[in-house]
Length: 218
Image 1 (cartoon, rainbow, N blue to C red):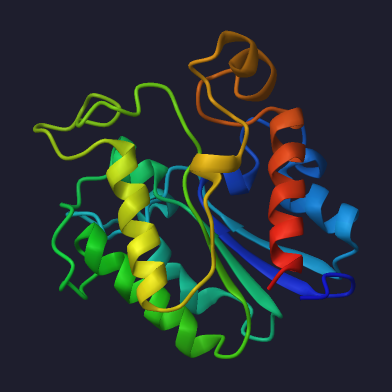
Image 2: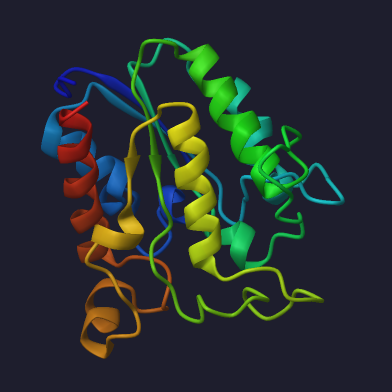
């Protein structure tokens, strides 16, 4: 994919919205746009949002899951990047479900619903899936600790994203494996993800480069 002059939709959560960066210009979407010469980076990041549908849906943007929001994106864009899953692990109340689910009320079903929908809406164009970054307490099966029962560690959400993307033949950039951001390392956390989740300016710049170079291979 030739990035210079292209328009890319970025669907995501707080990291895409720019939390952790010192200003909007330093969030990864904007850094990528400057570095690779995009015509426009359409930012559809909303803090706290999840891929899957929640048990109770309100008008609060916090409850507008990725599946709801894909219809609101620019259909003329040249590519789409989806970066989510960490909030499904952290505080989402949707169950994992099973691989046969196609309803957005489970994580398995929401991944199918979202990726199938994007494949239809942007058929023939790159639709890239990013796995979540490593984060503090990612092995806790209750996410941030407030889930009433054990569900799964972050690694399980990552594997589901990758399996569903493979089913729809969508390319995956496995940031969980290659981002270079691992908050359990004290030095790495201080520089790249001070709160244990959201990238710093340096962290946003790091993932911007990785995403841009990945898109160039598509």
